[in-house]
Image (cartoon, rainbow, N blue to C red):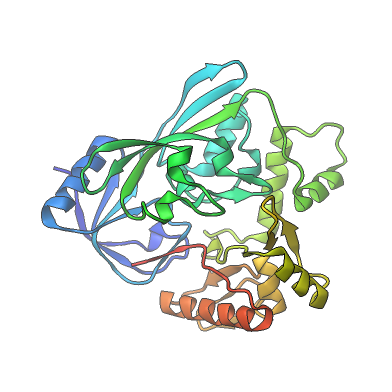
Length: 339
């Protein structure tokens, strides 16, 4: 029988440090113990909440049923074909440490995704992305346990239906699977992606003769540290709002009124706006309300200085309404709210 604990604090298991508790809790270090824990919950009719690194969640209240923290380790080179290789990663591996390990082994492709908080198992759910690269570009497949049956399933990229900060796991597959491992498609030959403006600018300031994947990773880390507070020092979940994507004609109309608006044309003809710019222009950067607020350097980051989830979500809603009134653009929360 799995070692199920009761009435467990989740404050150290979410990067906002919100004081929620789990009715029942289990930390799964391998697939079979996870399967047993899911069966335990199923026999008792308990809902199951799967928690990774807690870096993209808002725990609004105590979590009923069983909370499972997936901590399955492992980084294994599974297959090679010329310069291409497949790497199988346990869902409990720290994402940034995975990027560092990959670079040390000469496995390239993830460098632009350096210093993103969280665990590998959460990467496909969110389809994490940064500095011009998305997780789905290096995804091969994943294995997961179906929560309702305990069966092992394998999902391909087509199955996962990746979109901008979106996937099958946030839509039809929501709360149905516990991811146990992710297989990535990497390369022994660098193929650098340097077209993101902030990355280009930072690399130009380095004035180096050769740009390597290791340098890209280092520069990305420097940029992120300069813009985003360390959750261990100032609790946050990074970007609190998604960058909205709107039709080109609406973007042009907004540009006419706000010539300095930050916007990025997309391949499908639409335009992605910088949510941080919208929040900043709406006057929220640095604002504090009770124990929560907006970071003084990055308006996209909401911070917790001892407040509650209710305070945080109320602030987020006021920001959303303010941006909607000023720009007619509706912001969407990036973190998942539980329960």
